[in-house]
Structure formats: C-alpha cells, structure tokens
Length: 326
Image (cartoon, rainbow, N blue to C red):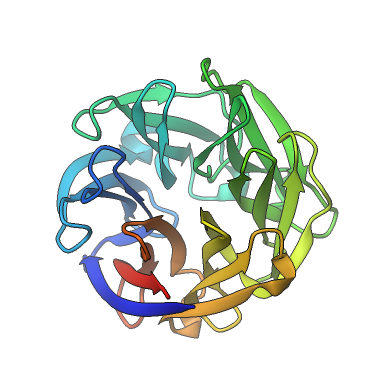
C-alpha cells in the first residue's frame, strides 16, 4: 500500500531539544510547505521557541523564516505543542499552540494562542483564545462550524479527559466546548479529528494510562455527542495525526509497540481493517523522545511526514519522510 521514498534530517542542534513538528502544504502554492516545531532546553523546558520553516520545492530544502520565543523567566510561560491550520472564513494561515506556566504539567496552567497570518506566512499576529486544555489539534470544518480538539488535566494525579471546542465558521470566538471521551481508568487525550463528508467526524485518541496502550477511535454526527471509544484494531501508540485521502484514513503516530514512527491506514468506515506501515526506528530508552508526527499530502500519491527522533544523539532532532501511496 505504501513505499518509503526517502527520509531526511531537517533540523539537528546539539544543545537544543527539537520536537513536536507539524507540516502542511500551502493553499496558495502547491510547491510550498510549512513546517513548525518547538525548540527548547528540554522536553519540559524553561526556555522555548516556535520555529517556522518554509520549503518552496516540496520539502527538498528548507529555510527558517520566523522564530517566536517564550521563557518562564521573562514571559511566565513556554510553548508546548504546535499545529498548523488554514481557516477559510478569514483566509488565514495559523500556527495553533498551547503554553504552560511551569515545567510540571499536572500542576501547570495552560493557554492556547493563534499566530495568525493573512499573507500565507509572511507576517503573523498573536491572538489569545479562551480555549481550555492542552495539546490542540488542527482546526476541522464540520457542517456549519469549526472544531478544534484538545485535552484537559482533571487532577494533580494527571488524570486526562478529551475535549472538543467549536465555534460557528463566521464567528471564531471559541467559547463552546464539549466532552469527547472520559473514563475512570483510561486517560484519553491528544485527539486527532477528521471530517467524513460532513456526515460524521471520527477522532483518534491516545490512552495515556500506560505506555503500551491501544489507539482508540470515536465518532459523532454533530460534533457534540460522541460514541463510546473503541480500540483501533491492534494499533498501539500515541499522538496520532490523521488525514483523509480519497477512500482511506491515514494516521501518523508514535508506535509504542515496536518503538517506531509509523502510519496506520484503513478504508473509511472499516476501522477493523486497519493496517500499519513503519517509517523510522527509535531506541527503546527514548520512548518519550520521538514521534509526535505531522502529515500532509504534497502531490497525487505522495505524502510528507514530519517527526522528531533522538536515536543516539544528545537531543532529539527533526526529520521528514516522503511516502508514496501505491
């Protein structure tokens, strides 16, 4: 079903922890790709920057164009996990990212910001949102609304609950929020949402109760009421980023079963027919220092997958894989 064409290092810095990348193709120019990642002093940093890279040749070469720093000492917060999205209603390109005011996540307060550009990434304006929670997903248009998933820490025990925020497409105020998944034992989080022909949405969830847990999925016909989550076959992993390609759902994820960066894929509506495809390998000791993928389609049958990985380096670095759908 898939062929790995190439993997390449995009950013590697000996003294910086480079992580949590996302990637998207420009709506204005199909040869133009954006990649954002967080650079910091550690996995839970006291200093951080969101770094935006642009490629004008489908990912062959990259140039850093913007850097947005935050530190606990100066700004009382640091960046966490960024995502990239376009919003049609205001014709904007957005870097969506949460911040936290401490290095211990279960005790930290989180806020979400949009870095919004109206000229396809040349200039950005910072907007604070009323969104609660952490690790935002991409923005997903569904029926007459925009949806954005994230999760919230329920207690200092680090109990988690998956949420989805929504706003009417022409308002973009983000005051409404609904429960997607909550469970006394499972720790649902890091949801990735996909619109299926405006008939329903499907969300892929991480269970953070333990390292080697199934990816779960849940569905909704209105974005407000969600089905009971079910395991996605034998797929075990974390931080899914899912997209639709014609008749197929493709999800890039941190494969915690085999300690690899992998894809899962299944026909729309046939979650039990899920299969997987491996892209890159990590060392088992680095279980929490790789993955957190982004994926975008760049041509008829080719996809770019951005991820971070450490291997035997002192700090993780950013890579891209080019994958062809056969």
